Length: 102
Image (cartoon, rainbow, N blue to C red; front, side, top):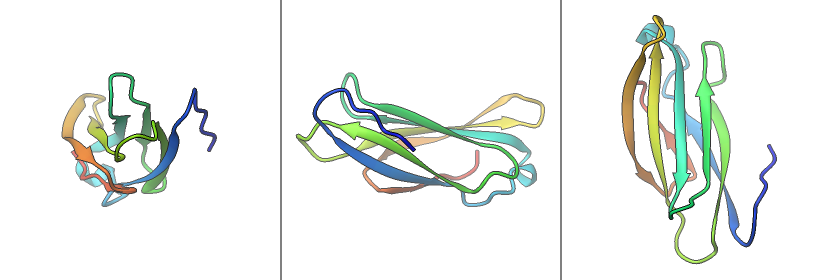
């Protein structure tokens, strides 16, 4: 993984985990997790899980040195018919984010 920063800031690595790698049992062919750091121009990253992929991925967000680190996340699944299925969204400051399947 390569993290490129445009300016001063601190890099934070976040492990995104699914509770189960069996997407088919949930009627899904994929799950996308989007993450966004705080601020108007907060850093962004996303991961996509497909059947057979490892149940965890590492993403990186860069945040300015001032203030505590927090990020917003949004989960979206894709059914076996290719239709989007809304999942959870929220905020966290944890270095490990376990997201339920939508």
